[in-house]
Image 1 (spheres, rainbow, N blue to C red):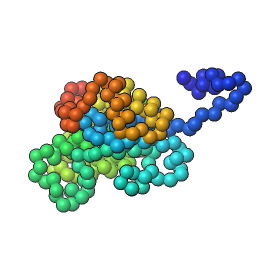
Image 2: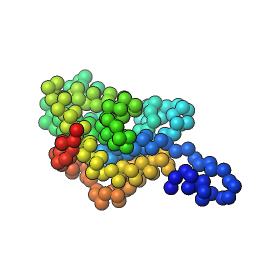
Image 3: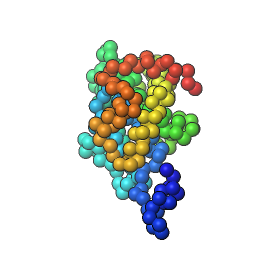
Length: 221
């Protein structure tokens, strides 16, 4: 229903005044991040999309008490909790699961910007430039855990996989974006319930193989 139709359905002679909602592109972006967590079978604490007024009012407080100046945020459990610390102390060097863990977490980084780019019908670079600075920073920290000669290929694979992920589950992304625009903040259980209901799937921890997203996404430009 359009804003005009909502006004028409209101009481005769009344003004059209609705509660401000987050911008659609913000809700789509955060829904893309949440989709990656869900597909990986990871814990999701919450997803948040903020209005322009909320952004102006001050930073968002994360679950660990950190102030974050952003339009929205999805909080959950990553495979690599603190890439910069892990890199400094070499906690994951030699771990045979490291490449997979990095590439699964990279899905979180790029799925939001990829979803936003699809919504805008624009290039990924635009979504990253407009609101993906934090995503890019996190991606760089993760990529730094890999040998230098593997980083470019891992990033390229991830972007292709995110395009396939978003393409495959676009109705679910839109449904979650609807809920984010309605509520602003959606608890993790509600995120999972919605995505499972829309898709008919219930991913478990690492139950989806990364290679499954190579079927079509690797061919995307």
